[in-house]
Image 1 (cartoon, rainbow, N blue to C red):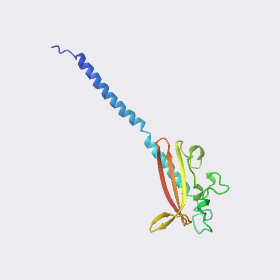
Image 2: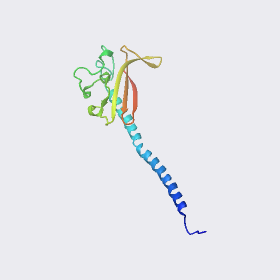
Image 3: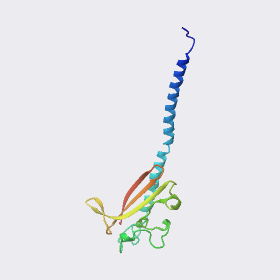
Image 4: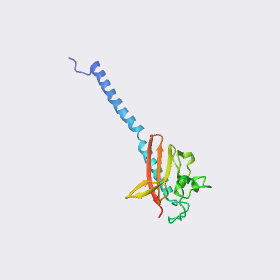
Length: 169
């Protein structure tokens, strides 16, 4: 028996085992690196949604209400929600329901929301009524408007939704 080194069979077995181990480590590393930006995209998506909702909530409740809310002469009918005459761009929107109907708004057309590429935004505004401590959908004017805002991340195929209610006080 010669005990001076490794046999050829032992060396081949070592190389095969080592190669399988390295391949496993490389697979895990590759998957980790490819998913590393997912959390950043999710964070940016929620930040975009929150910033857009804050911008909308900062506007007046209705065209006819004074700043800060109050008695309105005639609340806007649901059929008239959306930008009013002369409010062709978002920087001219002055009340919550002007944002109604924004659908698929992307970074190329969203200077007012400052969207990052790869995100789109949808906004729906509707009247809701307070009943027993719960808001319920209402097709008739009330003192509450619900803003339903969804930001879509095309790269992750995910949506981030925020719903808020603004009262006329």
